[in-house]
Structures are given as structure tokens and as C-alpha cells.
Amino acid sequence: MISPRMASGMQEKQYTPSLLSFFVYNPSFGSREGEEEKKILFYHPSEVEKNEKIRNVGLCEAIVQFTRTFCPTKPAKSLHTQKNRQFFFEAEDSFWIVMVVRNPMVEKPNKDGRPPTIEYQEEEILDTVYGAVLRECYSMYKLFNGTFGRAMEAGGVELLMQKLDKFFYRYLQTLHLQSCDLLDVFGGIAFFPLDKMTYLKIQSFVNRVEESLSLIKYTAFLYNDQLIWSGLEQDDMRILYKYLTTSLFPRHSEPELAGRDSPLRPEVAGNLLHYGRFLTGPANLKDPEAKFRFPRIFVNTEDSYEELHLIVYKAMSAAVCFMISASVELTREFCEQLDGLVGPQLTLLASDICEQYNVNRRISGPDKEPQFKFIYFNHMNLAEKSTIHMRKTASVSLTSVHPDLMKILGDINCDFARVDEDEEIIVKAMTDYWVVGKKSDQRELYVILNQKNANLIEVNEEVKRLCATQKNCTKKRERKRDGERAMDCFTTLKLSALQGVMTASV
Image: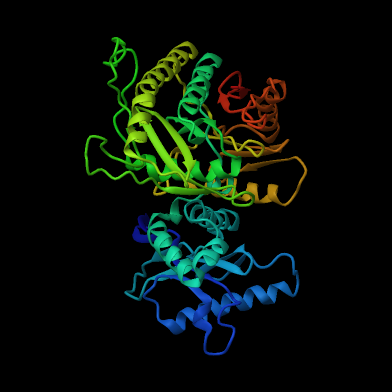
């Protein structure tokens, strides 16, 4: 991607990071001389000449082996060069995934007609960010295909290569590296804040549906792309949430319909009309030729390894994911039963949520533009909140702050990763912004303050006041599903006093 800009009266071009190559290999395959190509299970771009593929894979294999002589338990994770950055990840035993990213660069024209000067910005790429992107590529593959080892057991190397080619051919096209930032490191989940009564309505809805449709094994409930309820384990829900919010939901976006003025609010007896529809599965139940195939996902791959049908059903801004064992054949009758049961209830429930949310917003008063932006992440329940990101999908990341400030946030996060203790870092940016990072009790908070005339002492005092209410907030957590589901008690940040009081939403 090219971003032209003016500098010193002449136009220069700025190139953002881009994917050069992506491949999967296993060094134990093709160990004999002349059979090196057998090591390569997948390679992008596919049109690269065979000898170059072998040479690139061999170089990565040599780097990994060389670094293991210094630290056998921690092989190389990245290789820095002037023009690119290589990232290595051993997804499974002897199965390596490598991603090569071209460094961002600036092309500066010369006045005397000579070829433009290329300056590579080697330090603009963060290992933590793109290393997380690489690991997420594997997690997304595993969600829809299971592990590499399972494919080998089912059909050998040929089946694995087919699965890799089918998945990554499409997935890598959605990989927009210029949009990657600190949120990719966290891979968190945005929770929707609700009052207790509305939350109980949702819990009651989930219980009724699971009781009526006993085939349902797990359920997840989302509103406005934010999670409210989940029966899955955290790691499985994390990657499923990523797929839903960056891939599935954007493809099925629609105008919002909710509130008291909804034509369905009169609740006429016997009225079964609703706005519910399948996002996965049949597009039209009335179509006799409609297909009833649902995508399959794999969860608990580290333990019991469950293969499930994924049914995503949506009404207005509310979406419910129903997961059913893949051994069960889903029929037209089941889909019609689910549509008739869930559609009307979910439509009314979505309207209630929207109405209650709007009431709460009116009570809290009009939103004021705060003097700070923040990112918050809780490692215990993966709760994530950002006022920096105006929009975050797989293809675009619109942020309300300068990229240089995002780079500072990433650098602070790297410093936090090196220590286990609680820590606080304050940085004064060249643009007179103050950037503060605080790590405490498995929570991380990053704040960008726009107070040019403030000094270090004043910023430090303001951050202390900002965090004081976190300690005073009720650390009550709702737990569900065998007593293990945690609700975040620290997900809302509001402006108060010196633009810095943190409040809790349970």
C-alpha cells in the first residue's frame, strides 16, 4: 500500500508493511538430498520458482537450528534484515509456519533526475504485533480444520496439504498487515455492558433454548459485535469472536432496526413474524433447494477435541451462536424449529437491549470528547476496551491517534512483557502528547493524554487518580457454566474530575 505525502516541497511515497511470503514446512519430511521439496507443505505465493522455495525454507530451517545451539528450549522467533522481517512459529511438533513481511519504506525523489532514494524503516515493525498475527493465523486454521496432526492421521501429507492450500489461499487475502497494532497482541474480547435485569433476560433466553433444543451443546450471545454470554472456554471463544467480528458479521451488515417503534412491538397474539435469519446455513428456509450445510469448527483441541456445527442466527443487532456436535445431521425440520423458536424471542430481546441501552445513555448524559484516549485489557477474562479504535476489522483499522503514538504503545507493551512485576511507564511524545502505560494485577491500561502544558508530576498524579477507582470498584464477578465464567468488573472508562476517574461496569 502506498501513501503519498509532501515533504520539502517534493512528493514522496510511503509504503506500508506488506506480506512477501508465507509458508508451512516440516523439516522431518524429505530429509534425503534431492527431496527437499517434500518439506514444503504450503507456500505463498505459489508462483515462486521451486528452487527459490527450497532455498527460502532451507534458510529458515538453518536459522532455527543455529539459534537452538544457544537456547534449545527457545528457538528463534524473528529475523531482522534491512528490507524485511521474518517471523517463525512452531505451531506443532516439527511443523513450522513462517511469515515474511516487507519493512515499511519511504521513496524520496531526487532533484537531479537520479533514481529515487529508498529508506527502509526497520524499527517501525514490532515483533510482538506480527508474531501475534502469525500465531493467530494458525489458531484460525485450527478453528476450522483442527490440528495438523489430526489431518495427518486422517489422510496423510496429501490431505494436510489440501487443507492448508484451501484455507490459507483465502485467508491470506484478508490479512492486512498495515492495520495491525496492539489489539492484535491482546486478541481480546469486547464485552457489552448490561444492567442486571437485561442480563438475566438473556440468561433465561439461553436456558430456554438449550432446554427446548437439547442438541445444542454450547451457546454464545453477542450484541453490537460485543460479547454478552458464552459457554465456550476462553481460548476457543477468543478466536471464534475474532472470526465473527472481523469476517462473518461485516459480510452480513444491515441497517439497524430496534426500539419501541419496531413494527413487532405490539406483540399481537399469534404473530410469529420476526427479523431473525441464519448467517450460516440456509439463506431462505422457504426455498426447497436451500442447502442445510453449516460450517464446522473445532474446539478443546488440547483436550477432548470436539468437532461442532456452527449455527449463527441474527435478529437486528443481536446474534446467537449455537454449536451442535458434528456427528448430528442437521435437517430442514430442525432449522425450521430453531427459526420458529428463536426468531421471535431474539427479535424482542434485541429490541429490549437496544431500548435499555438508549435509556442508560440518556441518563448518563451526552457524551463529551474526553481529553484522553485509552486501551484496556484484562488477562484474566480477556476483556478489552479501546477508545482509540474507531473501527477495527480484519481489513481496516481506523484509529483516532497518530501512528507514532500507536508505536509508542507497542513499545511500552514490549517492556511490560519482559517483566512479571507490576510496572508503570510515562513517555512524553515529540508531539507534546503524554503516553502512560500501567500494568497491575494482570490488567494493562494505556492512556494518551493531550495536555501539552502538563509536567511529569501532574501527569503522574492524574494517572493515580485515574486508577484509584479501579482499586475501589466492586471486584464482584458473575460466574457461569460450572462456576468458571468471569464477568469483567473493569470495562468502562469515563471522564470525571481531571478527566480521569475509572468506573466499573459489572
